Amino acid sequence: MRLTVHRKAHFNAAHRLFKKEWTDEKNFEVFGKCSNPNYHGHNYELTVSVTGEVDPETGFVMDLKRLKDLIYTEVETPFDHKNLNVEVEEFKTLNPTAENIAVVIWNKLREKLRENLDLQVTLYETPRNFVSYKGE
Image (cartoon, rainbow, N blue to C red; front, side, top):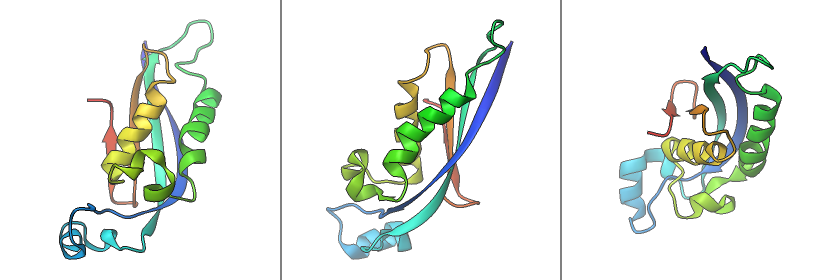
């Protein structure tokens, strides 16, 4: 029997969407106010979903305490109250769009999970703007 367990988390972070090789005018044309040279912030909401077989011995797909700890170590600690462009290594060369942030989070968590578990990351940049990534 396959089930999905979910864990919610959040972090607050600043970022700027821009391409260094573009002018400020072109960045504003493409990224709008998100290209503000002084950055801007979001209260990101994250849902991490892990799907797998229920272990007959424990009754768990995955120990949710372990998932909580992984999210804290791999996402909340390095991202929370940070300027993503400046302070998070992955985004020094990668535009920190919601899409790219979700992929980075997925990659960080994927390497810490057993291979037989499927992973999906859903990241809310605002209550109405969100992305999901499951490694495809």
